[in-house]
Image 1 (tube, each protein chain N blue to C red):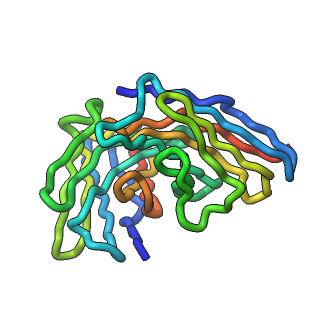
Image 2 (spheres, helix red, strand yellow):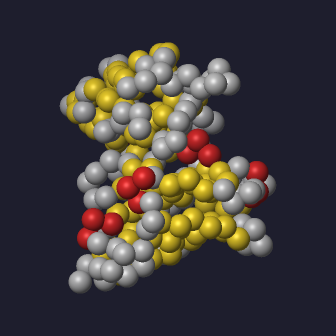
Length: 114
Length: 112
């Protein structure tokens, strides 16, 4: 069965960067897209971006352009999402999901606090 | 970006009674391939979101048949025929027709 397993909780200071991983299994890793979605505390869902795991093409939400980078490693079937210049507004649970958001990871809490 | 507008935002329901959530998009969600990439997601308390319905009306594997989706173009509806306790949570509509994917504000379903 398809599984997405994400890395653990992160606590960062303002201005720092965070890199969250998402390891995929149960399907052909290079055959589609992986999306990143985040959810601030008590808030709704916000789409951040995606990577085509076959050709590494990426698309990002305009508001995050320049701060977010999504990459993939086919040797470990892992996708990475890096977010730089963190502020308190980036405190959220970060999720990876397969294309059309069919399967989701368990989420990674990122807290940005001085 | 396509704006997704849900109603109601709060939905108290008696166990065993039906429930309905509406979602409207700011433009048609029909893609050039003829498909409409519109989904409903469920997020139970403390859990990751889960996709319930895709392409307007197709239920994902394991989703009870009391959940049904309908609609076309810009107007969509999720219906629960008889609400059960495990249905408590927040329901989101979302579109995957155009990047960026966008979500509705969420509808919080609670038991009366």
